Image (cartoon, rainbow, N blue to C red; front, side, top):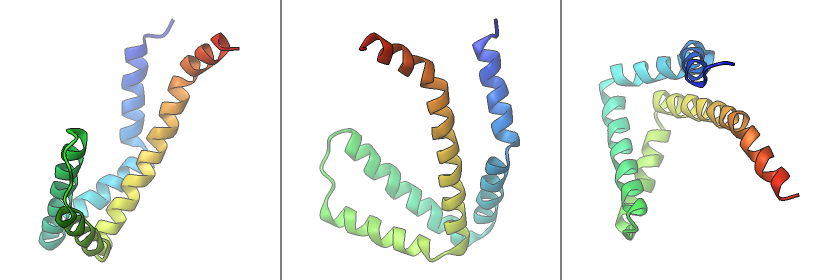
Length: 116
C-alpha cells in the first residue's frame, strides 16, 4: 500500500516541475523585477487580503473600500505583466481545483453510495 504522504510529496514535486507552475513563476519573477509593477501588485494584494479578512470576520466592507478595490483592479489589469501573472495564477488554480476533485472523489463516492 502506498504511503499517502509520499504520494502527496510526489504530487508537490510534480506541481513544481509542471509547465503551469513554471509559467506562473516566470510571470511572478517578471513582475517582481519591475519596480512599478511590483508596487502595483503589492498594493493590489494588500487590498485583496484586507477585504478578504474583513469578509471572513463578518465585518462590513465600505463603499469606499469597494471603490478603491475596483479602481486598483482596473489599474493592475492595464499592466501587461500583472495581467499575465493573474492569468497564469488562474490557470494553475484551475489545475489544482481539478486535482482536488480527483483526490476527493473516493469520499464523494462513499457518501453518495451511503445516500442511495
